Image 1 (cartoon, rainbow, N blue to C red):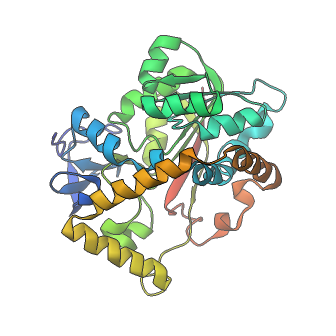
Image 2 (tube, rainbow, N blue to C red; image 1 turned 90 degrees about the horizontal axis):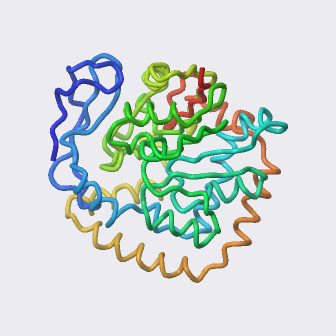
Image 3 (cartoon, one colour; image 1 turned 30 degrees about the horizontal axis):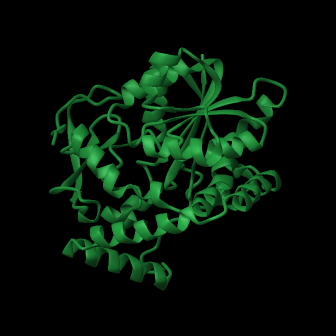
Length: 336
């Protein structure tokens, strides 16, 4: 494990960081305690000590739940994901090059939907199993297996639209990620980053139970320091907002949610979630293979065509939207 308490911040270079809180994640097989620290200058949140590359590979291989969910559940996530990302810039590409690159494309759910919508959709995915699934399940031969840094070095190709949804919080070096991002977005093209919000109001309410905190999330950005990182790599931010803008209220949460949270916290303290979760996802994986995916894919495309873009939805008008303190943020930036 690697201690990063006093290493220079990847955004601003500050070496001083402040301890925010400590917790444990036995349900993920995370060894020891997990410290969340905040850069003393730009506010970037990061975890320390950091798992090394071998430990990270083991952590993802055994526990990463997104690679074990049914196709139907994953395709249900695509319409709202599209509404807050591609839908906001789609008009720019109606009469132009509709070629896209999705960084962290997973099992290919976003690229296959974009392909159905008329895009020449490409992807980059570090997990070989997930990339193979995208090729075999959806016929996506445009998925590159590796990191965005490897793709940028090997392909030399540039795209008019690049998305990175729930990705930058996972990468061990946001600086090298941003440098590679700059290489794959063509001049005048757009990058869209969607990530948990380090300035989320609900961090104060939920503490270590906040959904953005887990050992898979190495860095957590807010709009300000993400803009700073992108600007250093040749991007100019055009639009930014938060979503999941409803503030949590400890007393006002539905009973079902409070009971579920209590059960999870109790299981955490006993270290029993890990084996149960792995067994559960193994069963889910078997069921997923038996599912017919086409109806769910068609329904996702239908919803996208019949739904408004995110900024026209109710969540965009909720309490936390004004100060961009919702649980997640989206930043749209143009390559200069």
